[in-house]
Length: 299
Length: 139
Length: 146
Image (cartoon, rainbow over all chains, first blue to last red; front, side, top):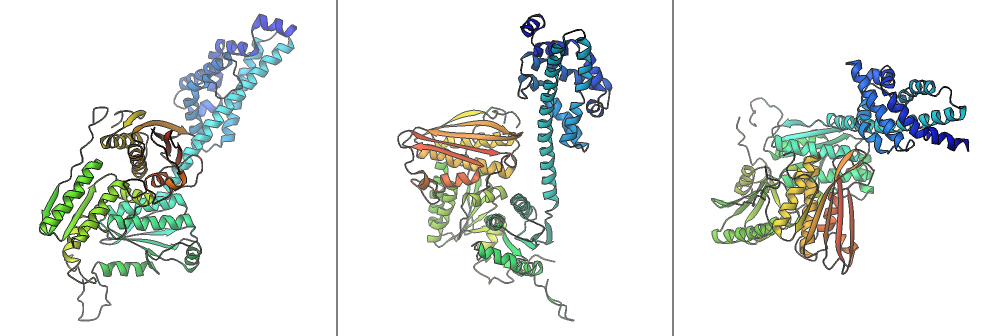
């Protein structure tokens, strides 16, 4: 068989690609340093980009040497995974989608292929085809590895932004000495309810607030999980020695709560934020009275 | 904290008498046996001294599990039998959230933000009527 | 605070002093993996319940603590094992209010609500193994949350 003969002379396609990558790592790294992926990420110096490119070429050579050119989990990738993740993260921070990053990785194939073809000149067409295919497969695997890391990096960014957003959307304000409130606006989900609970309770301690008002006037709907969170907040506040008042339960939400079979009877509720504040002030011994000439007594 | 494992802080629970009130300050991580001992000490002290109230200060506690929860509940129940009132104060938010998640809301237990508030609650709670009881927050 | 003791460990549970060790180790390991204060407290409390369970009902045993990671989110897995009499009726043991010893009957059921993943293997005569996992951030795979 001619193929076997060729293998005997030059090694398997994967082995040959490994040798090729190792032999030509300098040239490949030089070319890759000018490719968009490396050029735009390593902006400080070109040497850095070359260095990064070289690390990737060597990792690819290691993967090819173990004949696992189709395996994104191949050990050879471990050493560059971090670097690839950082590169991908830098690109996604610059606003690139995972797909665009993937295309940039794909653009690394051409320069390497050119060098490979040059090395293979004079070899039988079949051998050339097999080697080029092997390189293509390997580069495809690299693309997968980068895609995976960039998706993970993307998730982290999304998660971080989500948490920042949650915190920003949960301002706890002091209405009076000893009274804090969170006016909730927008949809409450389980994660946000959790943040609200923790933020509110922390503020209760910081401000030594005996009353904490959760105003849900701006909340369109409440599901059972969120209702449970509200109840837990009330219970936790009570354990800490504060009273939690829920204000602004709109009729539709009250209806839902009844339908869900959730018992709010143990919870102090008030129609509006101002009613809740009035209640808290009265409990604190601070009366609000209309100013009547000659009768300014309270305070 | 230099050793791989710091020696467990033996929980330390001083019981102080202030007028008619026992002030119990929990600190650190209590062994179960220490917690049980404490329970006994407090009920004995409450019986001996005809105290009117017990304040359990939990501000130094990082964790209340169902065991310690039970101890707190039992102290409250026992002192109530001796006609005294128990107030738990200073519970940290993380501890409170965890207790609620655990399913322990300790209903019927009186709570306060701080020892001052707890003392005030015990000193005045039964004397003056609810509305307008504290006019003192001075100008 | 950083390196004290590391995360992986195998701790014996044979006395109530050991429970203190367990709590302190889990607290420190969770902090090291970036758990927030509330998440730490929940996990340590669950560990305390489960370790006490191992001690009181299992006649002692051990806890294994290991770091885990899923989709880049670090977590902590705790395995409590004993060679005690086992639990004849798991469903009942997991329901609130059930107690065969001291406590408020919140042990197993309560611990389950405090962690992201909970698994229990037990049969009469072979002992009990409880494995719990919690993640430092939102659990990577959507699960109904307590």
